[in-house]
Amino acid sequence: MNYRNRFLGTNLLIVTLLLLISSSIAAKQTIPLGKAEHLFDIQSAPDGPLSLPSDVAIANDNRIYIVDGGHHRVLAYGPDGKFLFSFGKRGRGKAEFMWPLGIDVDKAGLVYVTDKENHRIQVFDRDGGHQFSFAVNRKDGTPGTPIDVTVSAKTGLIFVTENSQHRILVFDIDGTKLGGWGKRGVRQREFRYPGSILVQDGNVYVVDVLNTVIKIFDERGKYQYKVGEWGVLPGQFYRPKGVAVDSQGLIYVTDSYMDVVEVFDKGYKFTHVLASGKQKYKFYAPAGIAIDGRDRLYVAEMLGNKVSVFKLR
Image (cartoon, rainbow, N blue to C red; front, side, top):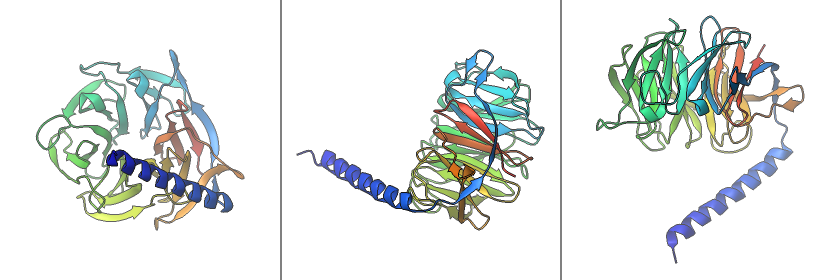
């Protein structure tokens, strides 16, 4: 008998049973709903529809940047969703991408993109002009796997989630590696496939995907707290993907399996799921999210091939 296959089959059965039980409980519970007004969707560029958009970032002037991953490029739109321009194409050269995933815009308007299969971060000006790039490597110097990038408005430090060694890497403003923390595991400073990352008000929010929590650190990597746990009930995650924080300190998290956006208060307690009236919003594999200075929420729906925009208040 192949004991490995037997073990995997047993685990799959247990997980399936747990999901069925949790789903039954969830169906009997009243899920708290919080109203968000849907404003518009971004679904296309002049040459056709979006393909697997994975992340979105908003500049200080409310310009919208979207990672159009299936087309290996970045799209830029005005605050009202009007198309402006695109940059990048499939390739290995400067200003070319191989499966870009994450994006952020710093306070000066520079755009940072994780170029996953090229193992680097590329940096552009607000109009898509290439500025510089820097490599994302493993400890032994071999190419790493960057997933997301964020820039601290306070210090200018660049934080990158690196999946091959389950770490958070920290770079100076010119791309010089300064250090980092983490390894594969389930403890406070350990991760299993860290995904989206956000720095806001001195806090570093990391989506720890397979550990199904949001871990919060200070900018030196000191563990602060966690949000959520495994499960399919309100306040739990099955596949968390994106994280954002609004002007009141509320934390928004996408779950790409449950197809919802969950919201937590400043005390890290679950409050509600985004909804329109009495009906929760049904997203299609929501991934990266962002909130602008007007408290508008932007949700990249990978399988919906669009970015949905909402007014939170």
